[in-house]
Each structure stands twice: as structure tokens, then as C-alpha cells.
Length: 579
Image 1 (cartoon, rainbow, N blue to C red):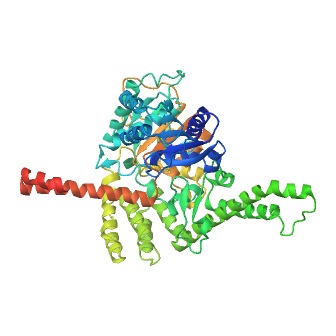
Image 2: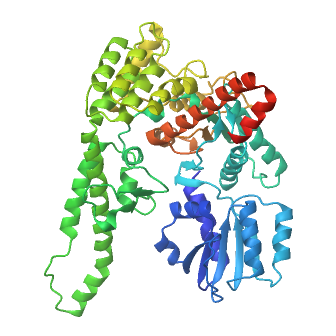
Image 3: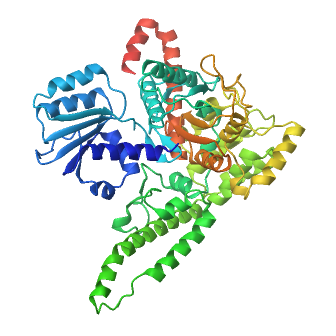
């Protein structure tokens, strides 16, 4: 199961089906992201696609010498744009591909608009998601919930994205969901409804062991998105921000113009592909080796070009040197900036305390270390809030909790009221009352001993002690021990054999630490193939935005409850309209 390969094959097939000749690729905002993550512009140029346009652009010229390949989401807006396009076609012929199922009525509307008979093909190619890594996908959606319920407009989009993944991977799965989350159940039912309705699309060859879709909720593990990460891809996303494989480096001190935005893609960057999951120390060593290798292969300033063969050799090798030079410059810049931020924000010290909060059970030591860091003037506001959030989740019910005192420390430190409110909100969102699983380390003697030896076996250093809850969930699932009482099947059937193909989807977003867990399970569990997805890929900034959205909704609910009582229903309805 490889989501990157699935999307690449769809795009290749689109381009090949249009035949030889110059082409334009017409996309919308979302399909532009879907394509750009798996293909570079230079790769598509090699396939005779010389122009890239947005379907909603008003300034496109007539180019009758070009064939148009349209790759669009099946939204009402896109269908309307296409209808207008076909009434006044700018290109010679149109090959139309929708990223998901489109209704017969919309197909009919397009056919009626095609009075000049320029449409050669209309198909559904199910690439309605961002293929981040071969085993990781995202829907790039924020603000998916209203409290503990779906944002009404988002549930259909998530259902489309998830069913698109199933169709791309050619899987008709059994479905399990997290019982403690109503959102998980709603999504499971929505996906099942589409599978039943579009049963012909899901009529794949039966396998001995049916594939499994497991739907989880981020609220069951609110700790993982709050931790600093130390592998390359995860660090880049946490400290610099990865957006569709692009990094904005424009704020880096002394950055050159050509490095203000760089692309990190494992598909087209061998160094990045080889270092995705390595820790920061190893990356530093590998950057040094890359530099030394480049120095050895670099053409000398006064290279002799005395013969035709010398000149030919130089010309043949120059693109390789140029590409290698770009790779070296890019990664040296990125790793240099990561190193600067780690030092400036004292993240090694911060991370050590984070890991202690997430993995250990020593309240006395934890509260001393958190307080000590909060009194450090170099600690950033984000890191301060994150530490107090972790403390609040970890020692939520502890009899000697010093949370009020830590909140006062945040106030004295000048942390904004908005960020201070997030501490209580993260407990409301992912606290003990809400969680369906045991997130915090066990407290009975036998379990602690078991956890201790398990920890000794697999921990590389103090910065990577933590394992996300997803690791234990998948481990129990693969061993056939995942409790039906916590993760029931949708429908009467259940798996009797060890699952082989598992698609995991996390409502509220996945993390790169969880992606690393899936990567390692795929490597170490023969016969098991796992793909992970989420409504988004988290870093702390996105996590705080998510919690901020949660706060806004809580305030809204409290206001509506209060004013409906104070004003009466009629006046309240008037207030609600303006809110």
C-alpha cells in the first residue's frame, strides 16, 4: 500500500491518455497541492505539459494549439467553472478528470455545455488527498469540529477524502472506530454509507483477510502533538513548517534569494529520503559527509577543456554537479537553521522535561523542572505554554498539583491570555474524562515493572523515550487483542485472523511521530502493511490553533446558553443571527 505511488500513477495515466502534443494542466486550489506533492514541475514538463493554470483564473489566453487536462475536485464551483469553460473553450480538446465521484446530473450539465464537442474524455481518478509519504496522507483540513461534533460542512469532505484513499488503494475494508468519540462513529457510518451506495466501485478482488479501516480521534492522545521531535522531517515541520513539501525560509537571518523557499521531497531528493527518520545527531554527521562528497566531485575552477571529449564530459556532468550543489546548499541551510533554533530556544533542555512529563511518574521532579524552565527568560511563549499543557494533562488529578501556581508563572512571564486559556482547554479536549484509552503510564506495580523493562529495551536517548498511543493501539490490533468494547466493528462482522492491510485515520490530525511509528511497524512486522492519515499533519503551531478554535466554540456555547436564559428565546435568536 503506497499512497504516493497511487496518486503518481493516476496523474501519469491522465497525461498519457491525452496522447502526444503540447498540453496545459488545469487544476483547482486543492488539486494543485495534490499534484505538486508527488510531481515536480520539471518532471511534468518532460511529459509535454508546458502550462499550469487554475480553473478559476480569469486571465487565461486562448491557446487552441494546446490540449487541456483538467484535474479537479467534484465541487459545485468547479463544475460551474467547467461549464463556463466549455461554452467558450480556450483549448483544442479537453480531457476531464475528477478526483472523486461526480453525480450523473453534473455530468449531464457538462455534456449540455459542450456544444462545440471539445470534450474527449470524462473520468474519475481517486486522488482526493495529499500523499505526504508512501505510508502517510493528509486532507489539509483545519477546524473540523464544533466541540465534540463535526463541523457540518467538513464531514462530507472528510468522507470523500477517506473513501478516495480506499479507492486509490483498491480496498473495501471492514471498519472499526473509537467508541469514546461520537465523531469517529459518525465518520465510520458516513464511509460505510458511501461504500454501500457505490458498491460497484468497491467491488475489488476478495482477499483471504479483509483490509481494515481504523478511525481514531486526536482527543485520545493530546500529548503527542505537544512534544518536540528529533527526526529530520518532524523537526522541519515543527520548527520551520512543512506546507505541501515547501518550507518558507524567508525569515532566516542572511538567507540568499534563491533559498527563501525550498522544496523537501523524498521522491526527488535522495539525501532527504535517506534521512527522513534519522535523529538530529545523525543528520549532522550525514550533512558533513554530503559536503565532503560534494567537494571531491566538484569541478575544479580551472578544469582543462583541451579536447572535444573534455568539453563533452564537462557538459554531461554539469547538471549532476548543479543538482548536487543545490541539494547541499538546501540541506546545509535547513539544518543550520534547525540548529540555530534548537540553541536559541534551548530545546534540548525543554525536550528533556517534556519527555519526563510524558513518560515518567515522578511528580516532585517534574514540577521542579517545569517551574525552573518557566523562570528562564529565554524560554519562548510557545514552549512555556506547551510545558504547562503537558503538566496539566499528566498530573490532571494529582493531589499535589501545582497547576494554579504554574498559571501564575505564565502570567508573570507575560504569556497572552489567549495562550493561558489554552491550558484548561487542552484538558477539556483531551483530559482523563474524555479519553477512551489509558494514555498516561500505568500505576500498579506489575504494569510499572513491565513498562520499565519495555522502556529499557527500545529507548535510544532521553529525547526519544515517548511512544505515541497509536503504537500500543496498533500493536494490540495486530496481535488480536484490541478490545471490541473500546474499538467496536461497524456492523455484525469481525476479523478472526491477524489483519494484513490496515488504514488508520485520525480525526483532528496525525503527527510525524506517529508516521515514524507506522514506518517502523511496516519494517518490523512481516506481512502487515499500514497506512496512516489524518485531517491534517500537526505541529505545535497547528495544535495551538486547533485548541484556539476549540476555545472559541466553548465561549460561543457558554454565551448562547447564558443569553438564551437572560433574554428569552426570541431575543436570543436575534443575537445568534449576528454572532
